[in-house]
Image 1 (cartoon, rainbow, N blue to C red):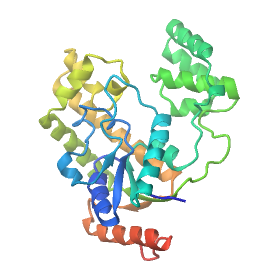
Image 2 (cartoon, helix red, strand yellow; image 1 turned 90 degrees about the vertical axis):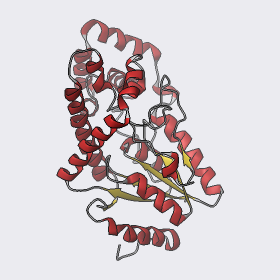
Image 3 (cartoon, helix red, strand yellow; image 1 turned 180 degrees about the vertical axis):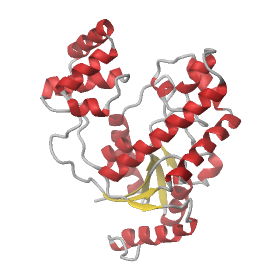
Image 4 (cartoon, rainbow, N blue to C red; image 1 turned 90 degrees about the horizontal axis):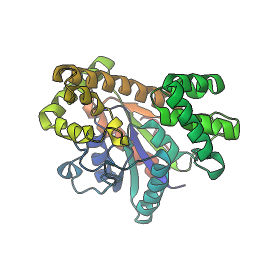
Length: 312
């Protein structure tokens, strides 16, 4: 199997800098596993790597979409697998970096994402859309909870698109969209490195990052999305929270506090996903930056010997 290195974890723990360092040491190229960095012009709010930070290392799946376009996990899965094959054909190491757990999991394992032709029915979608329009999003979500409690636990009632998709899959297949038809298998010889730090320190770093984004001009990016609030990109954390501020409903300080709160909650969800679903080798480079040498040694052992060194 092709070797793929993945660097995962919540926001603000140093994934970008580690990925570039490992790419230099291990002859690698980087694939973004982030659902928002695909959008052009959304640089500050997505903490997108800069040209200077790239240090000449090729980066893939960044700035490939306009903000008016959609982007799905199935599209990421197909495109990223093509990129992995291309990188490997050049004799280099693919390094996938991101905090979007579903993206990383769908890429490395042979997950079927429910986008097959026999799991789509426009008639059903229109029916559920009409139901939501007449009875409201909450009523639609309650209907999902009755039919597929597992999906309802994972999908927020405001995410009408995903609620309808879950109902569509359940109606057509009789199974939850959250449960694969068979146990997925790894498609690659994958080695996963996770970055984390103490919760209070992580939250402080997230709060500081939001303040830095404000200083760097995130409001300009958010204001551009405010003009088209229904596009997928506008739903990203760090953007939609400023819409009430632009509408004069709350102060800038209140909006920033909401961004910080939502970012902290998202970080918690990211960690839960990675810890519960994947075999990850965890490190804390925030408190122990010297551990980078240990990470490099472990990755080299995996590359050269096909296993992780015992003294990792």
